[in-house]
Length: 161
Image (cartoon, rainbow, N blue to C red; front, side, top):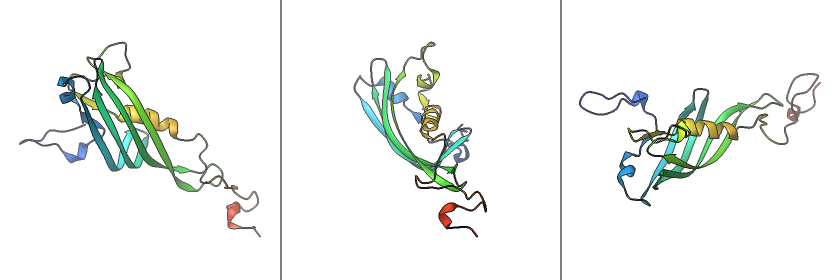
């Protein structure tokens, strides 16, 4: 959510890097494209998912049906290992390859419509795609042996007494 301030400008408290003004592309001829780069320390892509070190590029190309978006992104999110309960950073990588419809159609996916304002919010789309990249049973490393059944310490730390 952006808050417009008197005298122009936007409150940085509500700045969302995933809200992109693509309205100018809608008035361009078919084939016109524009790249948008991302390099954010932290981004909230869903109410229950924050990602860190979010980097990538998306290119929007004007088509007869709307805007075609192609991009690749890297991010990380903190998780807990299901074997040893250690916190670790899970690296995520995604690719988007979507057509945003303009003018918006009722029967199409609302996440893939370009609203009349010309501002596309990629958070919903990224939230869905990044959530699919998170493993159901995250493991800190493939060689993790979990916890000792006797002392409860990580097995990789050594033999218990």
